[in-house]
Image 1 (cartoon, rainbow, N blue to C red):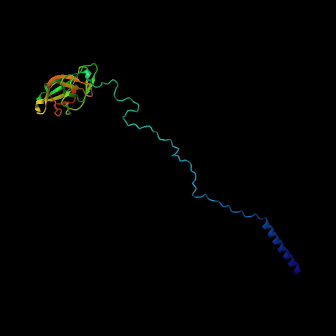
Image 2 (cartoon, rainbow, N blue to C red; image 1 turned 180 degrees about the horizontal axis):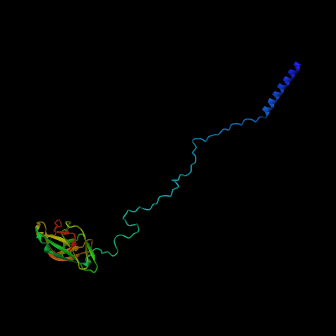
Image 3 (cartoon, helix red, strand yellow; image 1 turned 90 degrees about the vertical axis):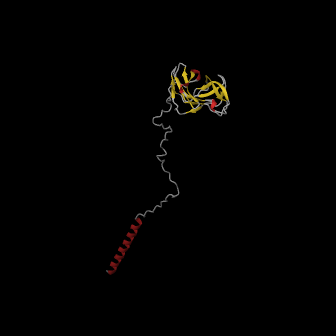
Amino acid sequence: MRSQIISQAIALTTAAAAATLLLTACAPSQPQSQTTTAPATGQASQSPTSSASSAPPASSAPATTPGSPAPGSPGTTAAGAPGLCKAAGLTAATDASGGGAAGSVYMKLNLTNKGTDPCILKGFAGVSLVADAAGAPIGAPATRDDSAGVVDVLLAPGQTGTAVLRYTQAGNYMDCSPVDAAGYRVYPPEDTDSLFLPQPTKACSNAQITLLSIGAFQPA
């Protein structure tokens, strides 16, 4: 009886071991781990183009100053505005009512518009003493007296502009080397043509001596 029990125990043990082996053989195997390789840190990555680089270029049009005319607009000088008075359209005269002082004579040099269109006198005339109507200047030309400011003097036909002309007596200078002058040669402002104003007087042939001065033209 005892041997039969032992035999059954061994049989049960053997069956259990066989069952265990069978279950182990049928069980699924464990998954293998995956190795991930990280990208090298020194390799530059591509990035999308930034929005700043895709922005349209700034306009190259020049900025305009407030109050200034727009590019291409007409200038401020109106077409047909009066031009400068020229010798061909003027007559010259002097008025000695200015008096004199310390050997000098003050007179008015008057230029009158003899043309049919208005013109402008602006600035200083060129004035010299000359031997005759076609002669060369004698001595030094007139210096400018800027005590009266430069203004635009608009001369309608027949109107006159005036400037103060001072003549210093030639006899005041020992080294004058006096000579006879037939009158004055007058160049209107910014003109290369001249007018001859007959008025006999004495001039100094010594060009180091200045006998004349002229002021800026003013309305008469």
